[in-house]
Image 1 (spheres, helix red, strand yellow):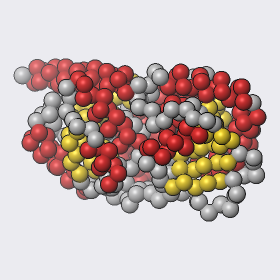
Image 2 (cartoon, rainbow, N blue to C red):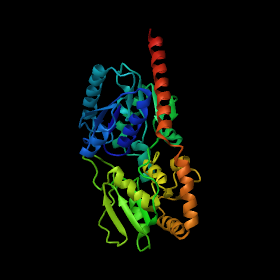
Image 3 (cartoon, one colour):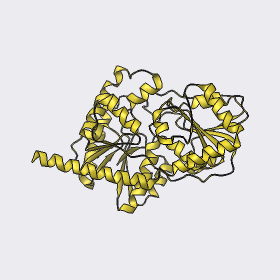
Length: 367
């Protein structure tokens, strides 16, 4: 399995490896991009069925990545020759077209072209044409494709053409924390440098309000990242607390305290942080995008991502209505129970089986 240590893919990979262990699945996790931190390595070491293989090859969505993408492909093929896996699970696109011996599955966590459309309102510029072609070829070369939502699967078809073998397997998460005693606290978390997370809107909406806004996340993009839009941390608002990057246990403690979790995202193919917050008893205020409505249905309040006034009003209504807020939070927590690691593992096992069957058909057709 491939992964990077930049964002949610890392959490997803470790969670999936843990959930696959009872099925007798061993995972070799090959990382690219920035190397895992000491804390991330320690978390990986607590998954006894997981072995970590590290590299620093640039990811396909980074600046000038293609020489590194090719070198990473050679490295991955050598790992496959050595390890002889039953399935190759790729959490990226470009390597889907490599000459794998085992069936290859591509999982579509996000993509630059759909991100760009959501964030900027226009198609990605020609500088991303090579990326588009690499993604298209990788999707076509994979024996199976998985997306965490129908919305993400639809985005693949819109931006890269038909993906007839795509299936939806929602993400799952072990709770970071149980609900605690709630405070007049709003929490938002994510990559502050990623304009899709729209953390800036939560900061602006909280200015001068009675509640405290806690902001968790990394303000610095990884080396080589492009297309971001950092949310500055220099505000002098007295009711905003900048927490920086938190380990999962500390983030869970803040979620347990927070009455509301605000994620006014412009783009979020699934939203692991919203799931973690719902598990910890937060009422959810989310960006009104198709993927988040798909995941949460009537268990959240939705606002247009760039309407700061609507975001402020939605949070204020929940903060002033204890009974309504508790009802919404309970609804979100019940909905969150649908997104378990066990269900995610079952979905991926079915996808692995489909990939294996597709590989057998390809071999038979070439015989």
